[in-house]
Amino acid sequence: MVVKVILALFTLLGFAESACDPSLPCWPTQAEVDALENALDPTADRSGLLRTDPVKGGSPYPAGIPIYSQNDQALYGYEIDALKPLYYTDKQLEYDCFAKSTIRNPEDREICFASVRNNGGQAPAFVAFPTTSQQVQAAVSFAKEHDMCLSVLGTGHDFLDRHSNCEFGMLIRTSLLKEMTLSSDSNNSTVKLGSGTTFSEVQDFLAPSRLYVASGWSVTVGILGWSIGGGHGPFGPSAGLGVDNIKEFEIVTADGSLLVCSDESNSDLFWAVRGGGGSTWGVITSMTLLTHSLPENGATLFQFYAASDNYCDTDTFSTNLDTYMEILPTLDERWSGLTFFTVKPTADPTKCGLEYDIFSQYIFLGLEEEAKEVVQSMASIGLANILTRKISSWNEDYVKMADPEYLCPTPLMIPSETSVGGVPSVLVPREKSADLGQAIKNRFSECSAAAGVATDGLCGRYEIYHDITGNAKDPFSADDVSITSSFRNALYHVVTGGGTHLTMDKVYELLGDYCYQNECAMQISEESGGWKKRVFGEQYESLLEIKNKYDPEGKFWCRHCVGDETSLD
Image 1 (tube, one colour):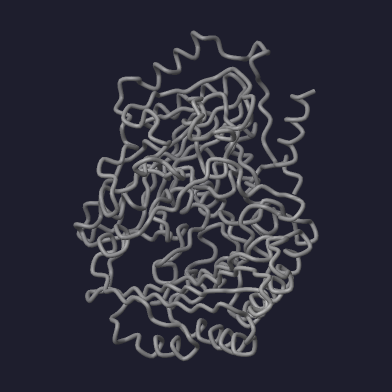
Image 2 (cartoon, one colour):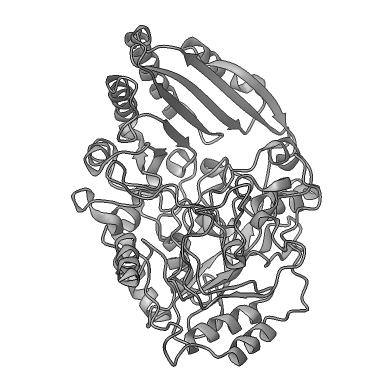
């Protein structure tokens, strides 16, 4: 009965089902497990996740960092200086990983440390840590031979835990694939990176050459999942999205083959992965990305801030917000930034329902004096310029000064009666800038009316990421990659805060029909188009055809990814 309940929950949340389990003849013998461990080379150096100088501004972050991890080490520091090639259990976990962990009774199951990731909980039967493409092939062949479902993750940063495997499946972690090789042409125009590399690592590697790669805002994010899912960040309007920067990748497909994919080789898979995202295509072992240079005189980081301990002067707030939403579309491709509207409900009648603050950060590819007009415009609506910093080196002046974005190892964003779960978001085109301002006003009013009770996720944070290609000077091709045309043309990626299906459907109706797949709701109603439309739009059927070509038995799976036929919404 317990097993049936667990399987029903897996189906509700969209987990894959493994065809094999320890009660069946297909389950590997101990001798076969030992053979896989030997194929993964136990003598190989597996210390690559150890942060050797764990202070702010010290050595790069080699992986996502779970919350409360001592010295900011990956996997809570578990065997971090000498990981085993394979972690394995044939026992059903009595309870989710870290669910009962306390200071006095900490988590002690090694399979939980090996599989720690953001918003996780469930553990697979096998976790493999390959260090070469050949070892990846061995792990894939093992899973196929024993009829196990496969999933893949690197840093474990995924907000949606899409890559949770079925209970008795194989999880391949690419975290130790750390190759970094700069091209030898005169401009060092590309860099080949192992798929376990983080942005912190690659920007540090490129710093002596005064180069950078297009990246996200968080330095602990891995290059792979961000890039193939679309990838928005500080250089989106000028350097393109993550998908625009991939020149080649190597991938182990479901039949165990190692393929090179580019415009000239396996071009259909090359197109599909660049926007198809997720671990549903195979195990990518390396990527070759374009490199970029800052302007000769560098760039400038601006931060702006405003706060109010009450929401009584709604007219001024509304006017200033309208002006702000008029300013943003005028910023050219040299500007890329984010703005957070944070709301705190209160029952104090003198505060009219809430307190709030606004934080905005922009990277400007130019000098401070060239941006004076924009800074003055911000000041005119109450956004004070709290920081101006010249950026001569992206690594030294931004990456090393940034804090990690910590992972939560337990289910934090799962759906409930009052929330669709995940990171509800919408891609907003230029023509809906005013509607975006109205959506923020609506959320403030709804929170204020809640009289201090934060229900339905109405209060919290509204996030505007003004860092997509909708304001690129030279438009990037819409056909070369498989993201939706709405993603290509959007001006903003907006994280809207939580709420019920009813709440979110109203937001979607006002702002748009699509979301960024790496930051999207965990549940998406059919009334708002369903997850296939909101994530993949007009591309889904073409993507599915390519998925079936390279993985006809559906061995690779992730939730709300191409080929997922188990998720109910």
